[in-house]
Length: 453
Image 1 (tube, rainbow, N blue to C red):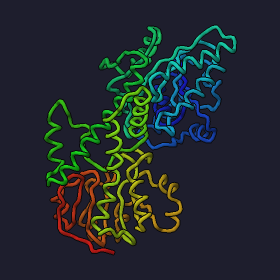
Image 2: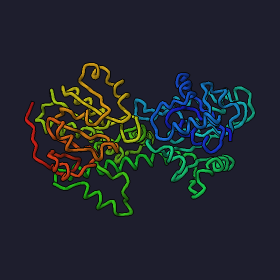
Image 3: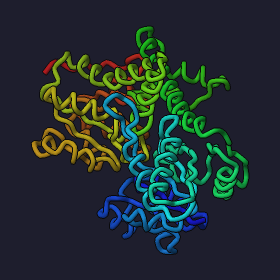
Image 4: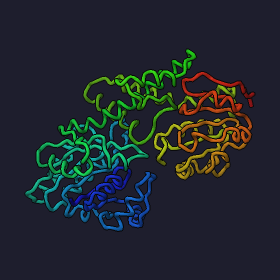
């Protein structure tokens, strides 16, 4: 098929590259000409494993191309995907200005009938608004054809997005007519040869499904974090509890890991947007409010633990951070728990030595003054980051951090104190190397107590 994807961000690039992999002719439209120039050279502006290989391969075969001219990009398209950002507005709702602007632009430049598909995460009723805007502009131009608009939300995990797209566990298609449904079913057929996992539903149900899925996963995380808080006061290890409840097939093992809070571009934004949607309908979303509040509190736990350990005195302390991105496998810093910790430590007068495999450049731009002044040092090596440190804090559980040489680390640190923000280490092993260990919802282990600065 001839496809157009509007937006060369995370979702748009993965969508365009994966459809090109299946032999479709794909044009990706991006308004930023500098970004387009980079993409045409095969430079991927985001870190996503496997994406650079796909993009370069299909630039070479000319199955995939890029343009900043929307009219040119959609001229012969059979299906147009809208994959632009829907950031959080001031009132917590999804900001649809980019989506609706694209709708107006499509209505002003489409020359033939096509199927328009919302790939962006949008509130219920957005497809109806998009269809109305497009067709209104078409009518103003005297066009006799009309656009059809469907919803096809993405369910991609950063760090494994290409794999998720190529081997989806489900494809949700919200269509208002049989022609749209059949067209999208054929488009996705190559991805579903082994298992038929297409879920057909109404457009509104598809839009809501995306929000409900993310809100439920965020709820599971926040529930476990709340259980961890109770465990910490009872002397119970949350990891034992996690294994105990995860073996129940009704609960499962996914998203029940206690930690220092969730971040990223989806969960925080989508929970807020769903809260706002409920408010506008006069419904009180008590569970969702609790999820958001618990996550905000969870991001402060590591700061509280450090303050407690150093008797409230962080001035002059050297704190090593392992992991800055909101999760492994991405350079995305949006809503990352590390930023809450960095802000608090720098404000308290601590010096920070941080390491992340791919996110250091983004942190350097965000904290340029702190880097220049020497208050924040960014290291490529986890061992360089712990040199002379009074404490080590694991924030993001990259594989590189899972089995380090703790004997070596013990010798490099000024004080052997480890705060495990993701509960990835065995406390007994860490204590055996001479450390004081503190996790999330786990009993403290070891006996190294620092004095106040």
